[in-house]
Image 1 (cartoon, rainbow, N blue to C red):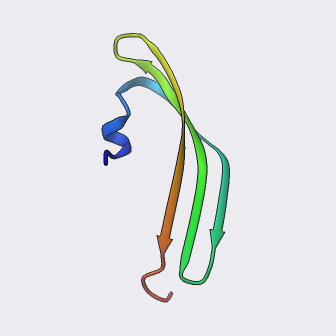
Image 2 (cartoon, one colour; image 1 turned 90 degrees about the vertical axis):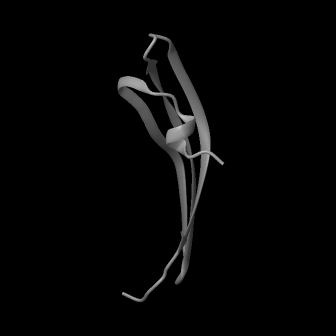
Length: 65
């Protein structure tokens, strides 16, 4: 599976990266989050690109703090 950096083409600055509809569930040892990410910008060749992706994150607490 590709990482976001490998999948997303290089953009001229500034680029778009906005989280929408962020939902977080946290418990004692685990947490989950999901959202939509609007991303895009101007490619190095001048073409405008826009995309929306769904992201899911899972977290595990490894030690007490």
